[in-house]
Structures are given as structure tokens and as C-alpha cells.
Length: 76
Image (cartoon, rainbow, N blue to C red; front, side, top):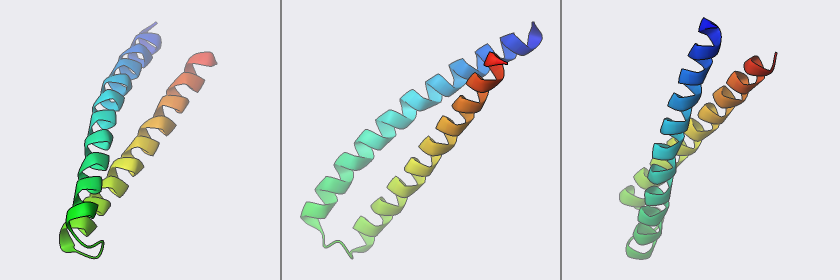
């Protein structure tokens, strides 16, 4: 019973984190578009924004992997 409650709490946490990551990803995509129009792609500003988006995408993948693991543990 405690394990199920822990999994439910983790699922809720992962859901909440995913929502915030979706906002960050969307805003980052918008900022990248604006920076691409305003600066050269090799500019420091654009490169930093690109690195930020790479990090956000990696975090999204990590959350997805964890969510899959939590779902799998609930199925067993």
C-alpha cells in the first residue's frame, strides 16, 4: 500500500514537472526564433539559447524515462 501511494505521489510530481517543462520548452523555442531573427546563429546569445534548449530537451527525456519506469513498476 505504501509503495502505491509513493508511486502515485511520484506520478503527480512528474506530471507537475512535465507541465513546467512544457512551458519552458515553448518559451525557449520562441526565444530561439526571435534570437535567430535578431542575431547571427554563431552569436553568443543564440548559442547560449541553443544550449539551454538542449538542456531542456535532455531533462524532458529524463522525466519521460522516469515516468515510464514508474508506470512499469505499477503494472507489476
